[in-house]
Amino acid sequence: MSFESGIPDLLRRFVATPHTFSTGMGGDAIRLETNDLIILDTFRSQFHHFPHSYTWKLIRDDVTSTDDVSTVFVSGSLVTVLFGIETCVVVDRDCRRVFGFLASDVDASEFLNRLSPILAESAVATDRSAR
Amino acid sequence: MKYVAIDNQNLRYTGILEIAGVSCSIRTNSLELASTLCSWRRERRKHDTVVFSMRVVVTQAKDDRATPPHFRGLGHIVIATFGGSNIFMFDLFRREISATVSAETARTAPFWDDTLFPIAIGVLGPAIGILPLHAACLEVGGNGMLIAGASGVGKSTLAVALAQAGLNYVSDDWTYIGNDRRGLLAHGVGAAAKLLPDAIQHFPDLARFQLSVALNGELAYLLSASEAFPSGSVRSCVPQWFVFLERTTGSGCEISPIPAEQTRWYVDSSVEPLPSELGAAALDRQEIIARVACLPSWRLRYGGTPQFAAQELSRFFLQMEGMAS
Image (cartoon, rainbow over all chains, first blue to last red):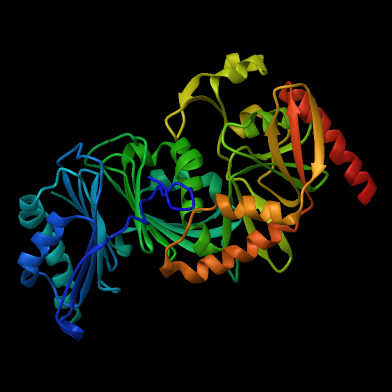
Protein backbone atom coordinates (compact mmCIF):
# COMPACT_ATOMS: atom_id res chain seq x y z
CA MET A 1 0.00 0.00 0.00
CA SER A 2 2.38 2.73 -1.11
CA PHE A 3 2.32 5.80 -3.27
CA GLU A 4 4.52 5.84 -6.37
CA SER A 5 7.15 7.97 -4.60
CA GLY A 6 7.67 5.16 -2.10
CA ILE A 7 5.99 7.07 0.73
CA PRO A 8 3.28 4.87 2.24
CA ASP A 9 -0.23 5.95 1.29
CA LEU A 10 -1.57 5.21 4.77
CA LEU A 11 -4.88 6.96 4.19
CA ARG A 12 -5.36 5.27 0.78
CA ARG A 13 -5.94 8.68 -0.79
CA PHE A 14 -4.20 7.76 -4.02
CA VAL A 15 -5.83 4.48 -4.98
CA ALA A 16 -6.41 4.61 -8.73
CA THR A 17 -10.09 4.74 -9.77
CA PRO A 18 -10.04 3.74 -13.43
CA HIS A 19 -13.73 2.77 -13.66
CA THR A 20 -16.03 5.70 -14.25
CA PHE A 21 -19.68 6.25 -14.99
CA SER A 22 -21.31 9.56 -15.76
CA THR A 23 -24.70 10.59 -16.96
CA GLY A 24 -26.77 13.73 -17.31
CA MET A 25 -25.61 17.29 -17.73
CA GLY A 26 -25.43 20.39 -15.57
CA GLY A 27 -27.68 20.11 -12.52
CA ASP A 28 -28.68 16.57 -13.49
CA ALA A 29 -25.16 15.21 -13.76
CA ILE A 30 -24.04 12.21 -11.73
CA ARG A 31 -20.49 10.92 -11.87
CA LEU A 32 -18.89 7.93 -10.20
CA GLU A 33 -15.20 6.99 -9.99
CA THR A 34 -14.27 3.64 -8.49
CA ASN A 35 -11.66 0.92 -8.51
CA ASP A 36 -14.26 -1.87 -8.43
CA LEU A 37 -16.45 -3.25 -11.23
CA ILE A 38 -19.16 -4.51 -8.86
CA ILE A 39 -19.61 -1.04 -7.44
CA LEU A 40 -19.60 0.38 -10.96
CA ASP A 41 -22.23 -2.05 -12.28
CA THR A 42 -24.47 -1.72 -9.23
CA PHE A 43 -24.31 2.04 -9.34
CA ARG A 44 -24.94 2.16 -13.09
CA SER A 45 -28.03 -0.03 -12.79
CA GLN A 46 -29.56 2.07 -10.04
CA PHE A 47 -28.24 5.59 -10.64
CA HIS A 48 -31.75 7.02 -11.08
CA HIS A 49 -32.32 6.43 -7.34
CA PHE A 50 -29.38 8.62 -6.42
CA PRO A 51 -29.50 12.41 -5.95
CA HIS A 52 -28.47 14.44 -8.95
CA SER A 53 -25.50 16.78 -9.33
CA TYR A 54 -23.30 14.71 -7.03
CA THR A 55 -19.83 13.37 -7.74
CA TRP A 56 -19.08 9.98 -6.20
CA LYS A 57 -15.74 8.36 -5.48
CA LEU A 58 -15.97 4.92 -3.91
CA ILE A 59 -12.91 2.81 -3.18
CA ARG A 60 -13.11 -0.94 -2.65
CA ASP A 61 -10.84 -1.48 0.34
CA ASP A 62 -8.80 -4.60 1.02
CA VAL A 63 -9.91 -4.94 4.65
CA THR A 64 -12.93 -6.96 5.75
CA SER A 65 -15.66 -5.87 8.15
CA THR A 66 -15.05 -6.66 11.79
CA ASP A 67 -18.39 -5.36 13.03
CA ASP A 68 -21.89 -4.97 11.66
CA VAL A 69 -23.01 -1.93 13.64
CA SER A 70 -24.04 0.98 11.44
CA THR A 71 -23.48 4.55 12.55
CA VAL A 72 -24.60 7.83 11.02
CA PHE A 73 -22.63 10.84 12.23
CA VAL A 74 -23.82 14.28 11.16
CA SER A 75 -21.76 17.44 11.53
CA GLY A 76 -22.93 20.50 9.63
CA SER A 77 -22.98 19.69 5.95
CA LEU A 78 -21.01 16.46 6.43
CA VAL A 79 -22.65 13.11 7.00
CA THR A 80 -20.48 10.10 7.71
CA VAL A 81 -21.96 6.62 7.36
CA LEU A 82 -20.06 3.72 8.87
CA PHE A 83 -20.69 -0.02 8.81
CA GLY A 84 -18.38 -1.22 11.52
CA ILE A 85 -15.31 0.95 10.99
CA GLU A 86 -14.01 -0.49 7.71
CA THR A 87 -16.83 0.80 5.52
CA CYS A 88 -16.97 4.56 5.84
CA VAL A 89 -18.55 6.92 3.34
CA VAL A 90 -18.85 10.70 3.68
CA VAL A 91 -21.48 12.89 2.05
CA ASP A 92 -20.31 16.49 1.76
CA ARG A 93 -23.55 18.28 1.06
CA ASP A 94 -21.93 21.69 0.41
CA CYS A 95 -19.42 20.31 -2.08
CA ARG A 96 -22.01 17.83 -3.45
CA ARG A 97 -19.57 14.97 -3.20
CA VAL A 98 -19.86 11.45 -1.84
CA PHE A 99 -16.61 9.65 -1.15
CA GLY A 100 -15.43 6.76 0.90
CA PHE A 101 -14.35 3.18 1.30
CA LEU A 102 -16.25 -0.10 1.18
CA ALA A 103 -14.90 -3.12 3.03
CA SER A 104 -14.00 -6.04 0.79
CA ASP A 105 -17.00 -8.10 1.95
CA VAL A 106 -19.68 -5.48 1.22
CA ASP A 107 -21.41 -7.06 -1.76
CA ALA A 108 -23.70 -5.56 -4.38
CA SER A 109 -26.82 -6.34 -2.36
CA GLU A 110 -25.54 -4.70 0.79
CA PHE A 111 -24.31 -1.69 -1.16
CA LEU A 112 -27.65 -1.32 -2.88
CA ASN A 113 -30.09 -2.18 -0.12
CA ARG A 114 -28.34 -1.01 2.99
CA LEU A 115 -25.72 1.64 2.26
CA SER A 116 -27.07 3.49 -0.77
CA PRO A 117 -30.46 4.40 0.75
CA ILE A 118 -28.75 6.03 3.74
CA LEU A 119 -26.38 7.95 1.48
CA ALA A 120 -29.16 9.04 -0.86
CA GLU A 121 -31.34 10.12 2.07
CA SER A 122 -28.42 12.07 3.58
CA ALA A 123 -27.98 14.03 0.37
CA VAL A 124 -31.68 14.49 -0.37
CA ALA A 125 -32.38 15.67 3.19
CA THR A 126 -30.19 18.70 2.53
CA ASP A 127 -31.80 19.42 -0.80
CA ARG A 128 -35.13 19.45 1.03
CA SER A 129 -33.87 21.61 3.88
CA ALA A 130 -32.27 24.04 1.44
CA ARG A 131 -35.59 24.76 -0.22
CA MET B 1 -28.40 2.03 13.76
CA LYS B 2 -26.56 4.58 15.90
CA TYR B 3 -27.29 8.20 15.02
CA VAL B 4 -25.16 11.05 16.36
CA ALA B 5 -25.62 14.65 15.28
CA ILE B 6 -23.53 17.60 16.36
CA ASP B 7 -25.61 20.56 17.44
CA ASN B 8 -23.75 23.59 18.79
CA GLN B 9 -26.62 24.41 21.11
CA ASN B 10 -25.94 21.22 23.03
CA LEU B 11 -22.19 21.80 23.22
CA ARG B 12 -22.23 24.15 26.18
CA TYR B 13 -18.63 23.74 27.38
CA THR B 14 -16.28 25.85 25.28
CA GLY B 15 -12.68 26.98 25.47
CA ILE B 16 -9.44 27.65 23.67
CA LEU B 17 -6.69 25.05 23.53
CA GLU B 18 -3.14 25.62 22.39
CA ILE B 19 -1.61 22.69 20.53
CA ALA B 20 1.75 22.89 18.74
CA GLY B 21 1.59 26.67 18.98
CA VAL B 22 -1.78 27.01 17.27
CA SER B 23 -5.12 27.92 18.82
CA CYS B 24 -8.00 25.53 18.68
CA SER B 25 -11.51 26.37 19.80
CA ILE B 26 -13.28 23.46 21.43
CA ARG B 27 -16.94 22.82 22.07
CA THR B 28 -18.25 19.79 23.87
CA ASN B 29 -21.26 18.56 25.78
CA SER B 30 -19.07 16.98 28.46
CA LEU B 31 -17.69 18.72 31.52
CA GLU B 32 -15.56 15.64 32.08
CA LEU B 33 -13.85 16.06 28.70
CA ALA B 34 -13.34 19.78 29.35
CA SER B 35 -11.64 18.80 32.58
CA THR B 36 -9.50 16.12 30.89
CA LEU B 37 -8.17 18.72 28.44
CA CYS B 38 -7.44 21.40 31.04
CA SER B 39 -3.65 21.11 30.64
CA TRP B 40 -4.06 22.26 26.99
CA ARG B 41 -6.31 25.21 27.80
CA ARG B 42 -5.27 28.81 27.69
CA GLU B 43 -7.08 32.03 28.44
CA ARG B 44 -9.02 33.77 25.71
CA ARG B 45 -7.28 36.85 24.33
CA LYS B 46 -8.77 40.05 23.03
CA HIS B 47 -7.81 39.49 19.41
CA ASP B 48 -7.71 35.71 19.39
CA THR B 49 -7.04 34.03 16.06
CA VAL B 50 -8.50 30.55 16.17
CA VAL B 51 -6.67 28.38 13.66
CA PHE B 52 -8.90 25.33 13.82
CA SER B 53 -11.93 24.14 15.72
CA MET B 54 -13.00 20.92 17.34
CA ARG B 55 -16.49 19.82 18.31
CA VAL B 56 -16.82 16.70 20.38
CA VAL B 57 -20.01 14.90 21.37
CA VAL B 58 -19.52 12.52 24.27
CA THR B 59 -22.08 9.73 24.23
CA GLN B 60 -23.20 7.86 27.30
CA ALA B 61 -24.56 4.82 25.52
CA LYS B 62 -21.52 2.59 25.70
CA ASP B 63 -18.25 3.02 27.55
CA ASP B 64 -15.97 1.76 24.82
CA ARG B 65 -12.25 2.16 25.34
CA ALA B 66 -10.34 3.55 22.34
CA THR B 67 -8.68 0.86 20.22
CA PRO B 68 -5.79 1.27 17.71
CA PRO B 69 -6.82 3.65 14.95
CA HIS B 70 -8.19 2.93 11.51
CA PHE B 71 -7.50 5.79 9.08
CA ARG B 72 -8.87 6.59 5.66
CA GLY B 73 -8.90 9.80 3.66
CA LEU B 74 -10.20 11.14 0.38
CA GLY B 75 -10.06 14.71 -0.87
CA HIS B 76 -10.27 17.13 2.03
CA ILE B 77 -11.71 14.63 4.53
CA VAL B 78 -9.86 12.21 6.79
CA ILE B 79 -11.73 9.77 9.03
CA ALA B 80 -10.04 8.19 12.04
CA THR B 81 -11.91 5.61 14.11
CA PHE B 82 -10.66 4.18 17.39
CA GLY B 83 -13.26 1.45 17.71
CA GLY B 84 -16.92 1.95 16.82
CA SER B 85 -17.64 4.52 19.53
CA ASN B 86 -14.77 6.92 18.87
CA ILE B 87 -15.06 8.58 15.47
CA PHE B 88 -13.09 11.63 14.33
CA MET B 89 -13.78 13.48 11.09
CA PHE B 90 -11.05 15.91 9.99
CA ASP B 91 -12.11 18.50 7.42
CA LEU B 92 -9.03 20.17 5.90
CA PHE B 93 -11.02 22.75 3.93
CA ARG B 94 -12.98 23.99 6.90
CA ARG B 95 -10.18 23.36 9.43
CA GLU B 96 -12.57 21.50 11.66
CA ILE B 97 -12.54 18.31 13.65
CA SER B 98 -15.92 16.77 14.45
CA ALA B 99 -15.93 13.85 16.80
CA THR B 100 -18.03 11.53 18.88
CA VAL B 101 -16.37 9.61 21.69
CA SER B 102 -17.37 7.38 24.56
CA ALA B 103 -17.40 8.63 28.15
CA GLU B 104 -14.47 6.31 28.83
CA THR B 105 -12.40 7.97 26.09
CA ALA B 106 -13.44 11.44 27.27
CA ARG B 107 -11.88 10.80 30.65
CA THR B 108 -8.68 9.12 29.37
CA ALA B 109 -6.10 11.93 29.28
CA PRO B 110 -3.29 9.84 27.67
CA PHE B 111 -5.56 9.20 24.67
CA TRP B 112 -5.77 12.93 23.96
CA ASP B 113 -2.20 13.80 24.98
CA ASP B 114 -0.30 10.96 23.33
CA THR B 115 -2.58 9.88 20.50
CA LEU B 116 -5.29 12.25 19.36
CA PHE B 117 -3.53 15.62 19.44
CA PRO B 118 -0.38 14.39 17.66
CA ILE B 119 -2.65 12.80 15.04
CA ALA B 120 -4.78 15.94 14.76
CA ILE B 121 -1.78 18.19 14.15
CA GLY B 122 -0.31 15.64 11.76
CA VAL B 123 -3.53 15.37 9.72
CA LEU B 124 -4.53 19.05 9.76
CA GLY B 125 -0.91 20.27 9.54
CA PRO B 126 -0.89 21.26 5.87
CA ALA B 127 -4.16 23.18 6.29
CA ILE B 128 -3.03 25.11 9.38
CA GLY B 129 0.50 26.05 8.36
CA ILE B 130 2.31 23.32 10.30
CA LEU B 131 4.82 20.88 8.83
CA PRO B 132 4.80 17.55 10.67
CA LEU B 133 8.47 16.49 10.45
CA HIS B 134 9.63 12.98 11.23
CA ALA B 135 12.41 14.14 13.51
CA ALA B 136 13.32 14.35 17.17
CA CYS B 137 14.00 17.78 18.65
CA LEU B 138 16.19 18.90 21.55
CA GLU B 139 16.90 22.37 22.83
CA VAL B 140 20.10 23.82 24.24
CA GLY B 141 20.78 27.44 25.12
CA GLY B 142 17.62 28.54 23.32
CA ASN B 143 18.61 26.75 20.11
CA GLY B 144 16.76 23.78 18.69
CA MET B 145 18.37 20.75 17.12
CA LEU B 146 16.28 18.61 14.78
CA ILE B 147 17.43 14.98 14.51
CA ALA B 148 16.10 13.13 11.48
CA GLY B 149 16.82 9.71 10.06
CA ALA B 150 15.23 6.55 8.82
CA SER B 151 12.78 4.67 11.06
CA GLY B 152 14.64 2.44 13.50
CA VAL B 153 17.95 4.31 13.21
CA GLY B 154 17.79 5.37 16.87
CA LYS B 155 16.33 8.89 16.97
CA SER B 156 14.46 8.18 20.17
CA THR B 157 17.37 6.58 22.01
CA LEU B 158 19.66 9.45 20.99
CA ALA B 159 17.00 12.00 22.02
CA VAL B 160 16.67 10.39 25.45
CA ALA B 161 20.47 10.20 25.83
CA LEU B 162 20.77 13.89 24.89
CA ALA B 163 18.06 14.79 27.42
CA GLN B 164 19.95 12.84 30.07
CA ALA B 165 23.11 14.72 29.05
CA GLY B 166 21.43 18.02 29.91
CA LEU B 167 19.63 19.16 26.76
CA ASN B 168 15.96 20.03 26.99
CA TYR B 169 13.64 17.47 25.45
CA VAL B 170 11.03 18.66 22.92
CA SER B 171 10.08 15.48 21.02
CA ASP B 172 11.55 12.13 20.05
CA ASP B 173 9.73 11.15 16.87
CA TRP B 174 7.52 13.86 15.35
CA THR B 175 8.22 17.58 15.54
CA TYR B 176 5.73 20.14 14.27
CA ILE B 177 7.28 23.10 12.47
CA GLY B 178 5.41 26.38 12.30
CA ASN B 179 6.45 29.33 10.18
CA ASP B 180 5.64 33.00 10.53
CA ARG B 181 7.33 36.29 9.74
CA ARG B 182 9.63 35.81 12.76
CA GLY B 183 10.88 32.50 11.39
CA LEU B 184 10.53 28.82 12.15
CA LEU B 185 9.33 27.43 15.46
CA ALA B 186 9.58 23.73 16.35
CA HIS B 187 6.92 22.27 18.62
CA GLY B 188 6.43 19.05 20.48
CA VAL B 189 2.95 18.09 21.54
CA GLY B 190 3.98 16.43 24.76
CA ALA B 191 3.61 12.93 23.34
CA ALA B 192 5.42 10.21 25.25
CA ALA B 193 8.94 9.26 24.12
CA LYS B 194 8.92 5.72 22.74
CA LEU B 195 11.81 3.34 23.38
CA LEU B 196 11.77 -0.23 22.09
CA PRO B 197 12.32 -3.05 24.64
CA ASP B 198 15.99 -3.56 23.68
CA ALA B 199 16.77 0.03 24.71
CA ILE B 200 16.94 -1.25 28.28
CA GLN B 201 20.54 -2.32 27.59
CA HIS B 202 21.45 1.38 27.30
CA PHE B 203 18.98 2.71 29.86
CA PRO B 204 18.73 0.31 32.82
CA ASP B 205 16.38 2.76 34.58
CA LEU B 206 13.69 1.68 32.10
CA ALA B 207 13.12 -1.29 34.38
CA ARG B 208 10.90 0.95 36.53
CA PHE B 209 8.54 1.55 33.57
CA GLN B 210 5.96 -0.87 32.16
CA LEU B 211 6.03 -1.94 28.51
CA SER B 212 2.93 -0.69 26.64
CA VAL B 213 1.46 -1.01 23.17
CA ALA B 214 2.34 2.10 21.15
CA LEU B 215 0.10 3.74 18.53
CA ASN B 216 1.69 1.69 15.75
CA GLY B 217 1.09 -1.56 17.65
CA GLU B 218 4.71 -1.98 18.77
CA LEU B 219 5.51 -2.99 22.32
CA ALA B 220 7.55 -0.16 23.82
CA TYR B 221 8.42 1.85 26.89
CA LEU B 222 6.35 5.03 26.67
CA LEU B 223 7.95 7.76 28.74
CA SER B 224 6.01 10.91 29.46
CA ALA B 225 8.27 13.97 29.27
CA SER B 226 7.27 15.15 32.75
CA GLU B 227 8.08 11.74 34.21
CA ALA B 228 11.26 10.93 32.31
CA PHE B 229 12.80 14.42 32.03
CA PRO B 230 11.35 16.28 35.02
CA SER B 231 13.86 19.12 34.91
CA GLY B 232 14.39 19.37 31.21
CA SER B 233 11.54 19.47 28.73
CA VAL B 234 10.12 22.37 26.75
CA ARG B 235 7.14 22.58 24.38
CA SER B 236 8.83 24.61 21.63
CA CYS B 237 12.08 26.16 20.45
CA VAL B 238 13.65 27.92 17.47
CA PRO B 239 15.29 25.27 15.27
CA GLN B 240 18.87 26.21 14.41
CA TRP B 241 20.44 22.93 13.30
CA PHE B 242 19.42 19.88 11.36
CA VAL B 243 21.16 16.57 12.02
CA PHE B 244 20.72 13.53 9.82
CA LEU B 245 21.42 10.40 11.84
CA GLU B 246 23.09 7.26 10.48
CA ARG B 247 24.43 4.23 12.33
CA THR B 248 27.61 2.33 11.55
CA THR B 249 28.66 -1.11 12.73
CA GLY B 250 32.07 0.03 13.91
CA SER B 251 32.86 2.40 16.73
CA GLY B 252 33.45 6.11 16.58
CA CYS B 253 31.53 9.21 15.68
CA GLU B 254 31.76 11.41 12.62
CA ILE B 255 29.96 14.72 12.13
CA SER B 256 30.16 16.24 8.67
CA PRO B 257 28.25 19.04 6.94
CA ILE B 258 25.63 18.19 4.33
CA PRO B 259 24.33 20.51 1.60
CA ALA B 260 20.91 22.16 1.80
CA GLU B 261 19.74 20.15 -1.24
CA GLN B 262 20.20 16.94 0.70
CA THR B 263 18.21 18.23 3.67
CA ARG B 264 15.51 19.40 1.33
CA TRP B 265 15.43 16.05 -0.45
CA TYR B 266 15.06 14.23 2.88
CA VAL B 267 12.22 16.44 4.10
CA ASP B 268 10.50 16.47 0.70
CA SER B 269 10.60 12.70 0.46
CA SER B 270 9.37 12.11 4.00
CA VAL B 271 6.18 14.20 3.91
CA GLU B 272 2.84 12.75 3.00
CA PRO B 273 1.66 13.55 -0.53
CA LEU B 274 -1.42 15.76 -0.67
CA PRO B 275 -4.37 15.46 -3.06
CA SER B 276 -4.81 18.11 -5.74
CA GLU B 277 -7.70 19.71 -3.82
CA LEU B 278 -5.17 20.82 -1.21
CA GLY B 279 -2.85 22.59 -3.66
CA ALA B 280 -2.71 25.85 -1.67
CA ALA B 281 -1.80 23.97 1.51
CA ALA B 282 0.91 22.09 -0.40
CA LEU B 283 2.46 25.43 -1.50
CA ASP B 284 2.50 26.71 2.09
CA ARG B 285 4.13 23.48 3.16
CA GLN B 286 6.81 23.86 0.48
CA GLU B 287 7.70 27.26 1.92
CA ILE B 288 8.32 25.72 5.36
CA ILE B 289 10.33 22.89 3.81
CA ALA B 290 12.50 25.44 1.97
CA ARG B 291 13.19 27.25 5.25
CA VAL B 292 14.04 24.00 7.06
CA ALA B 293 16.44 23.14 4.24
CA CYS B 294 18.26 26.43 4.88
CA LEU B 295 19.21 25.37 8.42
CA PRO B 296 22.89 24.46 8.87
CA SER B 297 22.84 20.67 8.45
CA TRP B 298 25.13 17.82 9.46
CA ARG B 299 25.30 14.10 9.09
CA LEU B 300 26.02 12.23 12.33
CA ARG B 301 27.41 8.73 11.80
CA TYR B 302 28.13 6.75 14.88
CA GLY B 303 28.66 3.30 16.27
CA GLY B 304 28.50 2.53 19.97
CA THR B 305 26.17 3.64 22.69
CA PRO B 306 23.65 6.49 22.39
CA GLN B 307 25.30 8.08 25.43
CA PHE B 308 28.60 8.24 23.51
CA ALA B 309 26.89 9.85 20.48
CA ALA B 310 25.01 12.26 22.76
CA GLN B 311 28.25 13.33 24.39
CA GLU B 312 29.95 13.93 21.02
CA LEU B 313 26.96 15.77 19.55
CA SER B 314 26.51 17.99 22.63
CA ARG B 315 30.20 18.88 22.58
CA PHE B 316 30.03 19.68 18.86
CA PHE B 317 27.06 21.99 19.19
CA LEU B 318 28.36 23.72 22.29
CA GLN B 319 31.47 24.53 20.25
CA MET B 320 29.30 25.75 17.36
CA GLU B 321 27.28 27.87 19.73
CA GLY B 322 30.46 29.30 21.25
CA MET B 323 31.78 30.20 17.82
CA ALA B 324 28.48 31.80 16.85
CA SER B 325 28.38 33.96 19.98
